[in-house]
Length: 331
Ligand SMILES: Nc1ncnc2c1ncn2[C@@H]1O[C@H](COP(=O)(O)OP(=O)(O)OP(=O)(O)O)[C@@H](O)[C@H]1O
Image (cartoon, rainbow, N blue to C red; front, side, top):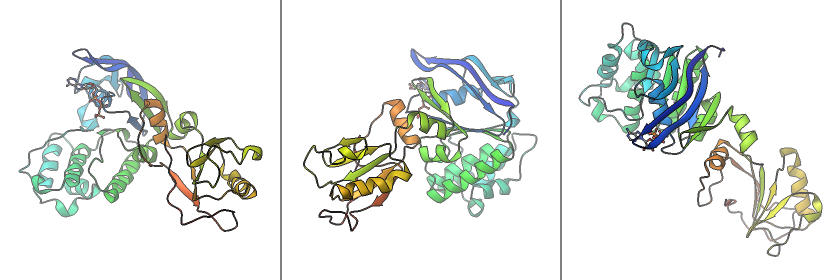
């Protein structure tokens, strides 16, 4: 990555018949950087991608390589739109060759198909490919002109886990070779894994920008150590004197801000207080926590992002510990 600005938005604004899609967005993305744009449905991500690639008008300054977005050299831009419906009665190879033919110079089609994991399906009609294979062909059409900046609007939707990882590796190597990648995604795992910096868009406004680690440190909340099914009276805090900040829940104790180095002390404190339990889980905040906190979105159920089980009702700790169910955290 270097300091040259490739993608630039200053006070970008766009409304559709009274619906504000972009409400003064400003950002810079540098050469070789992977920038991940996240945000709820309708936040304005696709609108920003379209404005930056000159496929939709918007007010404000929108530039690629220093030129107004609509005037920039198209051979330097790769765009994978969110919705892409190419002709179905073409093979994967014919489709990618067709898109390559729109440029004066393009990469060898079979190389690009191999890069997206479709070497064996090159002669299959697009309509006979699976959903994930179709998406890979679409990615290939965005790569075939060997772009310097790549816009990918939810690139891995429908692609299986192995294919996603292969595509992530490809994007990493493209970025290493100096390609700038601007990516939107609803997969926090994908963004945390790929992006050098992340921007969170909410109601058309960029409410946070930073590296994944910066955003998690600033907005992710504390690490949580959850004692599920504690063998204590309802409402009691058996660790009151042990120096931990404890939230007493219906069927759990949650110790806030416990560092990995303090985990042993926490388990010892439980033993000293003769507290039995069903399971222990230590959960570090993730980009998903940042997203949920900043968007105000909540979810029902027992999903514990980033959770790692520490232990279940170990010997040596008092209490009647049966086999431990997974810890449950409600927010
Ligand atoms: N062509 C259009 N005509 C009218 N309204 C539109 C149009 N495109 C987008 N919008 C509106 O603009 C807002 C932003 O939409 P946009 O597609 O940019 O969101 P998004 O963040 O990409 O959402 P998603 O995560 O669902 O893809 C939404 O309220 C949407 O309904």
